View (cartoon, helix red, strand yellow):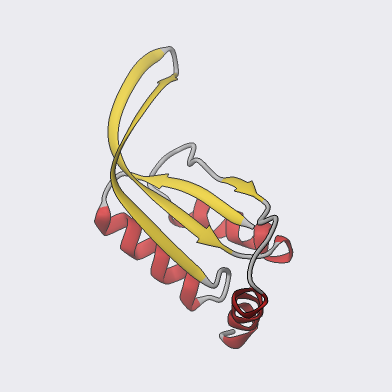
Length: 104
C-alpha cells in the first residue's frame, strides 16, 4: 500500500521518513516538496505549502505506522490515507516485503 501524509516542511519530512524506515514500518518514503493544500479546518479556510510523503508499506504494518506517525507528527490531525498498490513488479514487491522484515 501507499500511505499519503502531508507535513509542514522538509525538516519534519526527513525526521518522520527516517523514523518510519529505520523502525521498518515502511520500505521507502518519497517526499514531494512544495505542494499547496487548500482545505477548511475548524471552520477556517486554509492555504498551506506542505511536503507530501508517499510511504510504501503493507497492510500488516499500517496500524503501527499510523500510530507512530501520530506520535511524531506536529499536526493535531495529520493526514494519513492509505491506498492499495494494485500492481507492482515482482522484484519491487519482493524488495518491499524484505525491507519490512529487515530492520527491527
